Image (cartoon, rainbow, N blue to C red; front, side):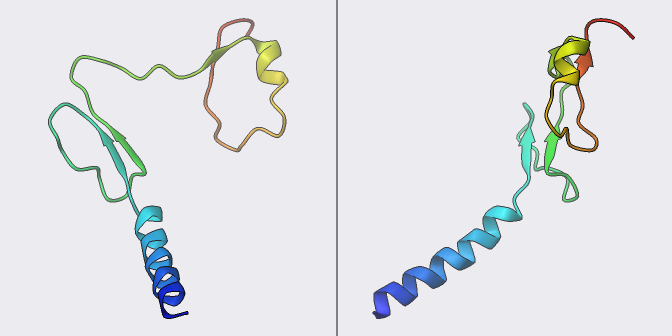
Amino acid sequence: MKKTIALFIICFITSFAAVAQSVAINNEGLTPHPSAILDIRSAGKGLLIPRMSEEDRNNIPSPAIGLTIYQTTGM
C-alpha cells in the first residue's frame, strides 16, 4: 500500500512538471522563452505550416479558434 501511495505521489508531481514544460527548436541550444509553449529560432530557415485547398479547409470539423493553415486555392 505504501508503495502504491508513493508511486501515486511521484506520478502526480511529475505530471505538473510535464505540463509546465516548453520546447525550443534551435541550433544554438538555447532554452525556450518562459511564456512560449514552442520557441522556434533559426537564422536560415522558416516554418512550413500545413497547406490545403479551400475545400479541405472547409471540411475541418470544428476548427480551433486561431487554427493556422496556408490555403493553396481560391481567396
